[in-house]
Length: 393
Image (cartoon, rainbow, N blue to C red; front, side, top):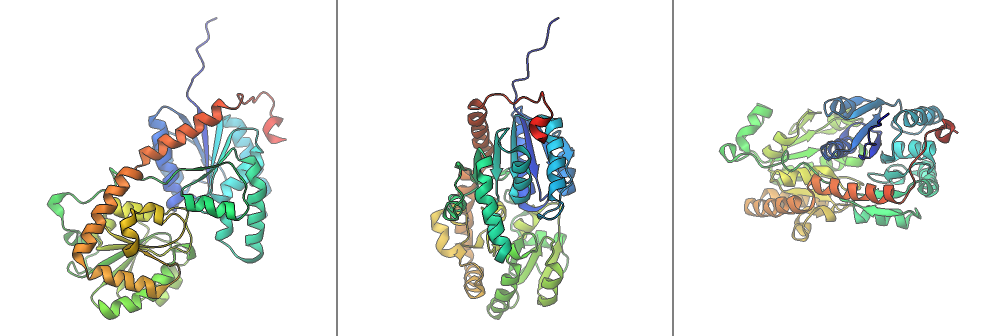
């Protein structure tokens, strides 16, 4: 009997938790690019925004019940993940962020080529005893990752300094530069589009926009402290926080009336295009997407000098656009200076967009990830799933 030739396309299983924010966007963009290249792609995640989007891409979607943080349910999450892997039978597992990276490596334990992508290190996100436990795990778990993919050289250096000895690869984040682009010339400048987003926004007032999950990592509390100083110089300026998260109520309680909370939105592009300046005051990152997206939309940025920030900018922008983390005085000074200098904002935005197009197009990112997969799959014998206990044991 004639048997069809085996499908040469690699079977890739992405595992993700969280399912919103930057991690979800990175996974979704990478999945789309891999599907376009002919790979067989399945994603395991708890659903959420990422699950909804995946169903529209044509990728295989497998619900994986897991909380965002480690806890007493971890053992059950690992068992469920091991069963999922047994059903999908991937040739390679790519785990995204700390929780999926923890569960995936415990479930696979090196038996299948495994890529772990931290998207910022877990031990930077917590403090005290929890940080020590997270660091011990990352040091131990590195043995079960064939590659640890960092999105910036600075993120890799942080791991090395912390004693996470691994086989590293640095692949910068990329974005969809067709989607994130300047407004068509017919609708420029940005101001007229503001009334469509929010009728109460004055089209002539300086507008600062911050896009990100409302949480301690993204530093909106620092921005609100800085905003008090910005208003002394630019009293007509308005600030819009785009996103939702656990710190929403606390931030609202301390915000001046000139601050608007837009909540979570399906499309951030109109907000980028409407802004005079985009700010991301993060306390830690691997390489944030929001500055790349803003620059691609032709908007200047101010961001904190955390991992990945300098690498996401052309060198000429750093003196104007980078400030120390958790420093509201420096943040206010940078925002105020750029709001007052329209020609400088335009020049920085133009340089930034050209940099993103040449360096941070998601297609370049997907090509480098594909090269990494080929390297791993070419150096390991095929995985056998003949015995169920090969993964579940």
